[in-house]
Length: 164
Image: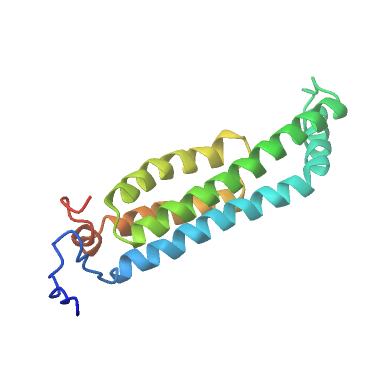
């Protein structure tokens, strides 16, 4: 006895997810998020390795100005804590940038919104630790451009309101 085969069934609208490639603005934005996170980590790693030199320079500068209220040991301890904060925070931001930028590249509208919020915190983070360097400025600039690209005309069409 032979069992009859069931005829093929057309997939529903939910099952047949249409895959579209992201526009160039979204693809460029993805790589800019990677660059922004990498710049932050590189800047933090450099400060981590040069923290004792930074503490000594700050002490000498304050002493020359007649405002030396901290010892070199106290400034070194501050630099150690600051360097760990900056390094771990930069690694955390890189991870969030990678995760959310990948999701945005797939067309997830929530990821684009979260990247906007994270961009504000990421740019503020570069300045909150008191170490404005060329890496922090570069990372902040790249963050601003990456967010802007997600909200261009092509990016807005790629993230329709009813997709999520």
